[in-house]
Length: 127
Image 1 (cartoon, helix red, strand yellow):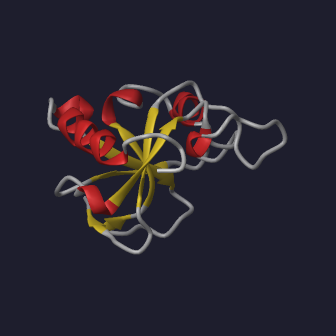
Image 2: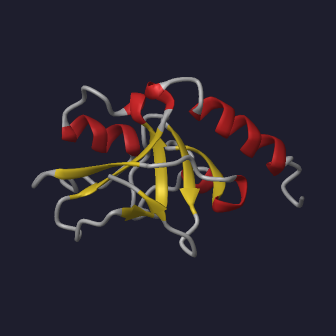
């Protein structure tokens, strides 16, 4: 591990965290302008970070571009939890992809919601 992290342990911890209750379950939020699907890939977070929030608050929390969710959003809930080989650790939304945030990037700094990346080579059934 070049980054010095034990990814197997971090993934086991993530799955245990997701299993702690419905507020910790992984979800994906996307703009309604994207074609709806019954599967998900890409960045995911926990339900509790966006539950009860307005879409503009969710944008700020997740570090999405201002106005990304203006027209509405799809909230995808997984029909099963990702297995360890189906996702990667990505830190928090104020450190995109686990890296320090850089001004002028495609995405603004988020408010610190946990995030993971569902591998793009796999898809998860979602509703």
